Image: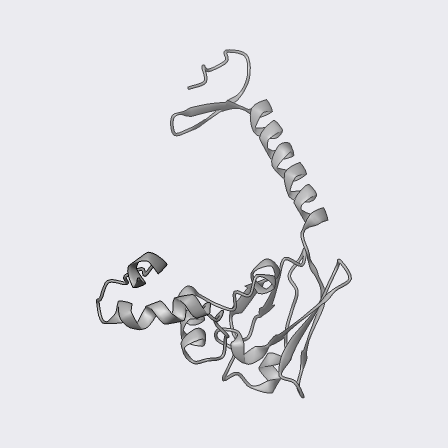
Length: 161
């Protein structure tokens, strides 16, 4: 715990005692780190809803375009075309939002393929809307025996003789 200086203004936050100079230093450092992050992070520069394809088209500051089917996004599947067309990019472009529908999605999350909560993503996968990776033939051969609770025995050339 920091000792309380005698000649500077201090602020007590729980067990911590900070001087105004230390608080200013921490704010300046946090601002610098945030600005550095914005330089490397992909940000939305424009967004629109494409009615024919029912996709959200997001132009990114790095020169690429992201297109996401709106029916995959949690909370938007049953929305009207009018509401879907009202998309905004809050500053600095880290997310997109539909204020009328109270739905927000981060650009990093969409780029990572996260279209909603974990439960939503599991439902999409079960419904076949998201493709699961195909297991290797070896894994597919083992699974039926595992389901029956049997132990898989390894066979060798010496055992067959």
